[in-house]
Amino acid sequence: MKRNTAILRGVASVMALFTMLCMTATTLTFTYAGIINSYLNINTTKIIQPDNADGVIEAAYDNEYGTDSSNNQAALLLELDVASENIAQAEEGTVLLTNHNNVLPLSENAGVTLFGNGAFHSVGISSKTPFEAIVPATLTSALQDTLGVERVNAVLGEQVYAELGTTSGTEIVEGDIAKVKENESTWQNNCNDAAIVVVS
Image 1 (cartoon, helix red, strand yellow):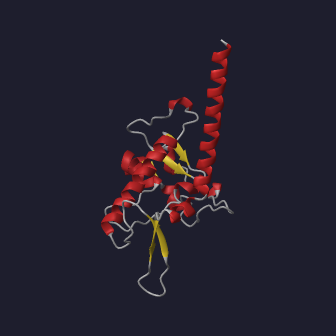
Image 2: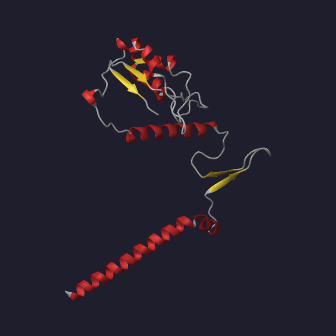
Image 3: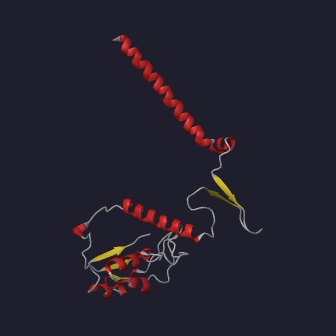
């Protein structure tokens, strides 16, 4: 019995030492990856020289899309893959905290009204794309595509928020509540199944 205990202690000690060595080696490998790659002659980046003297020298990581910025086919594939990843992250990362009166999911014929400057001036979203194949989407356009243009009241975007900028890290930009109330008639009879408020 004592012999078995001694063997188990010995094995546990060796495994603990081995685990410690692995953790230390991993940390050192990540810390000195550049030096190790240089010594082993492994290149993880490619230096791209500019076409003219005014251009910027860039370092690009190896990737399946290549490094030629004039290759529209690869750039289109990259943009589609990024869009797909963004959609996946939104689907997996969105959390519904409460669902009062079972308002969600919206019924097929539901009409909604958009409130909040963030619904029309999103933070950190690009509204441009270099490819005609990819149409930039906004919250408004996505809802209109899904529910139908006549079922999404975006009047406040034109009447209250059109001239406002985007909320930044130093300034919150929001519409005047008095101006919002002036447009109350636009959602009293229609598009009043749900109010979608975007705070940014």
